Each structure stands twice: as structure tokens, then as C-alpha cells.
Image 1 (cartoon, rainbow, N blue to C red):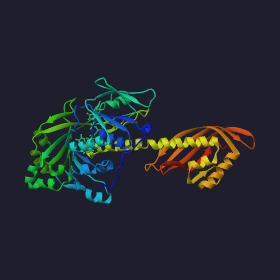
Image 2 (cartoon, rainbow, N blue to C red):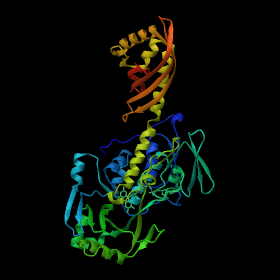
Image 3 (tube, helix red, strand yellow):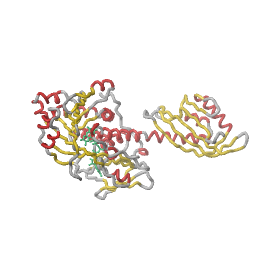
Image 4 (cartoon, rainbow, N blue to C red):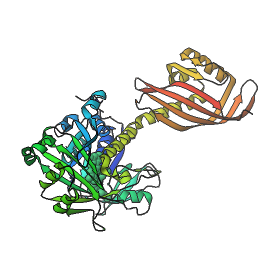
Length: 476
Ligand SMILES: Cc1cc2nc3c(=O)[nH]c(=O)nc-3n(C[C@H](O)[C@H](O)[C@H](O)COP(=O)(O)OP(=O)(O)OC[C@H]3O[C@@H](n4cnc5c(N)ncnc54)[C@H](O)[C@@H]3O)c2cc1C
């Protein structure tokens, strides 16, 4: 059982159900599909590769992302593949302990904040399975070349390299560090930036390690270890419950221009770690072949979304970092969760919009029973110059006074609606412009008011819980 609340898939009426295309089936893209499907939308994923697979070896999921994964109902499926390290050790390059953090102690203080280590293929497959279970349609061999926003601004067309065109209400670019969609969003070429570092990524079978008393405890007592040394560092942890050992070595970049990944030379790699904690050369002696990955970054963007609202980006396409805090995929999953949260609130936004328009209408119809219908039983109106009117009876008297004093002919505009995370409370700002008729004096004047509504969802219906307004005419 997870102590993190599990999101249920929303059932949504067609009017608020969007057709969404996610570009890229990496960890961020599949995560976005899950979050948006849980929010009740229709999601397709377009992936350029001919088959869906995660490259690389191990991946750490820190509490920020393990919480997200649990909220998507994935704890049971992931538990089968996760290794839970008991602590992380920061070591000097000679093996001296500099600092450590006890994961079990921190998880006991903050329930549900697991540190999980995975083989990437397992994490990715669990995400794909969940996305398909929730209704995702996944298309491979679908490289997106262009995104064209429609003049109306409420949808977009994707152009694929095979000439196909596909329309969507929302396009989510999750196409990774070499993102084409980032360049489309920016309107100019924007290649990733070199960092001067590269990573050797290796996976060792633990069978040989278990034969060596100095290495066996890496497998039998899973912990995450970082060694920090001159010009380089090294990270390792166990995968698949002790079956594999993941090691990443971070060293200065010596790759030729233009290359991103290359087969590495094992002897060259070993030479870089001569004189380090003797367990590292021992581990590297167990390695037969290795890959070199050039490490690039993407500085963040001023805005991740097109002003139309029909096109947004997430994950490495926006903010690829050096992997030294093991957080790139975690951040992509958090991006996905936030997107799902926002697009989950669309029905509430629509219902509050109707409530506010209904309020604008009753100001013209002037029927007290219609006004009271919009307020909660313990609602409050705070009119300038009067004590607050609390509850239906007082609110009724306040509106009688208002309607007996003035008559409004106004246009009512909604400036802002913000729904709180619990989807029970929201606030909204509106403005009203037009003419105010003073009934007793028989005179009229221009009317410019601003209003603040605090709304509450009661038994599935949004109502006005608190309301105050003020004139926008200067007092002096
Ligand atoms: C050595 C190393 C170790 C790391 N360790 C960790 C770690 O422990 N924990 C962690 O959280 N992060 C880690 N990261 C970072 C993490 O791997 C990335 O941040 C994460 O995978 C990014 O996911 P993404 O979905 O944004 O992009 P990607 O995984 O790159 O996915 C992009 C997808 O889009 C597809 N695509 C590209 N262009 C198009 C197109 N035009 N049309 C359609 N599809 C397209 C690609 O084929 C790909 O499938 C590490 C990174 C490195 C290099």
C-alpha cells in the first residue's frame, strides 16, 4: 500500500475533453501521457524511433519523482523492479567517508518518500504499461518536423516526416535534449550546450563481485556511493535486486566534435581512476566493454509554452542538466505531474466561469432568490461602507438594499480564476463596466467596479462563499 494518495482517472464530458499529442516516448513523454490521461483527456504519443526503448543503464528516482510515480498508481508494478538503497555515501577519491544520508531514516520521517533505483528499461516499461492501461495510443516511426498553431489559437497541426498531418488541441513536446520542438517554439536553431564532461556508463554482472569480499557488500547491502576526486567523480548502485551493478564515471570530455556517444576504450577508462579507492580499479577490472556519452545541457527557457496555450514543452527539451544530482528524469516526471494537475482542473474552470456569468446575469435580473441560489449557506458579502452580511438571510437583505438603491447595466468580465489544489476552493477576479442608475435620485453615472470571489465546491457544485467589491473610481 502506498501512503501517497493515488489519483483516479477523471471522467470528463466531451466539451472539456482535449485531444492531446505528446511528442516523444521517453520517460518525460510517457509520464505526461499518464498525467493527462488521469486528468480525463485523450492522449496519443508520437515517437520518432522504430521501437520504444530506453537507452542507458541505471536510473535513480528520488522522493520528488517516486511520489509522483506512486500518485499515478504505479507502486505495486515498480516494487517488483526497484532496489531500495539504505543510504547514500559521499566519499573522497581515496575512499574516506565525507558525508552520508540515511534513506530509511528520512523515509520513516516522511512516509512514501522512497529512494528507488531501477534499470531504465524496467521503469520505462512500467510507465508504458500504465499509459496503455489508461488509454494511450502510441505511434512509432512518427518523427515530428513541425508544429503549426491554428489562427484561432486553440489547436495545432503536427507535420510528420512521412508527410502526415495530425491536429491536436494541445501538443506537448517531450522530445529530449536534441529537441526539434524547442527550436520550433523559439523560432530559431538552439543546439544543446557542451559542458566539457562526459560519462562512461557501465553495467557489471554481480556474480564476480560476490566472489570478492571487498566488493560483495556493494551487492548484499545496496547503497548509493559517490566518489569525488580531482577532475572526475564516480557513482554506483545495485539494480534489479542485486542482479546488476550500475556504474557511471564522470570525466573531462575528450570526444571528437560532433559525436554524442561512442564505444569507449576500457584501458583508457581504467587509467583515469588509477590511485583512487582500490575498490574502483577492482570494479573496473570486471568491465569488458563500455560506452562514452558526451554530457550536454539545456539552459531553461523564459517560457515553456506558446502564448496560444496549444503547445508546451517539458523534460530535457526545456531543462536538460548535468546528471550529477540524478534528477533529470525526476524533473521531467514532475513537469508531467504539474501539467496533469493543471489540465485536470479544466472542468472546474468551466463550472466557475458559468457561476460568475450567472452572477453577472442576476445583477441585471435582480431576483433575490436567484442571487441566493449562487451563494453557500454561510456565504458572506462585504460591500464597501457596510458591515459584512453573513448567511443567506443577511445576504438577501443586503441585495434588497442594493437593488432598491441602484440598477446596473454592465458588461461583466472575468480576469482570473484560480482553483486550489484540493479542487474545493477557488478564487476569481472580475471587473464590471457600464452605467449605474440611482433609482431614488433618478440620476446615472459610469460604473467601474472590481470584484473578488472566493468560491467553494459543495456537493459537486461551485458556489460563492465570500464576495467583496470596490469601485475603481479614484476616491480623491
Ligand atoms: C549519465 C546519465 C545519468 C542519468 N541519471 C539520472 C538519474 O539517475 N535520475 C534522473 O532522474 N535522471 C538521470 N539522468 C537524466 C535523464 O536520463 C533525462 O533527464 C531523462 O531521460 C529525460 O527524459 P525526456 O523524456 O525529457 O527525454 P528523452 O528520454 O530523451 O526522450 C525523448 C524522446 O523523444 C523522441 N524524439 C526526439 N525527437 C523527436 C521528434 N522530432 N519526433 C518524435 N519523437 C522524437 C526520442 O526518440 C526519445 O524517445 C541521467 C542522464 C545521464 C546522461
